[in-house]
Length: 245
Image (cartoon, rainbow, N blue to C red):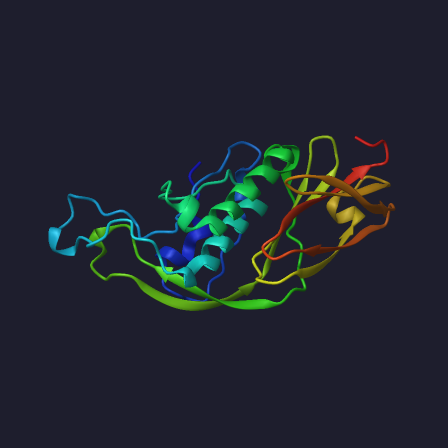
């Protein structure tokens, strides 16, 4: 299923509404969601649209000030369980936008290692995060109706970390975490055992794109953990049953 709400700022005027992963929560157990407008370039221009509105440089790279918009969209998709997608990707982005493409690639690698949650799992109630907010520059340009208005931009205050909680078919629980901050970020989490269906007891592991390490243990009442994310870092915190699956 095509799901574009992670990129709402690209096509909707600021109106005070916040995107939530409602669609993903409802349909995740029966359909894979993918897609976004998360791009490092201006949208493509259809040759059938009026020539007078055609851009001088098709798929021109966006200003770097919009990079955190790209990070936010990729982070939302990751923690909401969507299949990774980058719109309008060009090979030149590997060198001219190396940091942004590496960020998207890192999330895809972590997802591939934690598919039992992010692909095959059940989406749980999102966790509240007590982290700083940042003021992001947002680009807006419709991909429809000839783009007569041209590129506009606005600023939006958003949380500098995104999180999503998941339960695997075997009963283990995990929290996907992504930072879009320019500096290291400390995130503290507390999961109530009854609300999130945690195993009676077990161990907490931290999984990223290269390694899996033991962080501690949890009991039948709650699981509390603090993770330090590097600049634009990501990980999945696993709460595995004591049997050590």
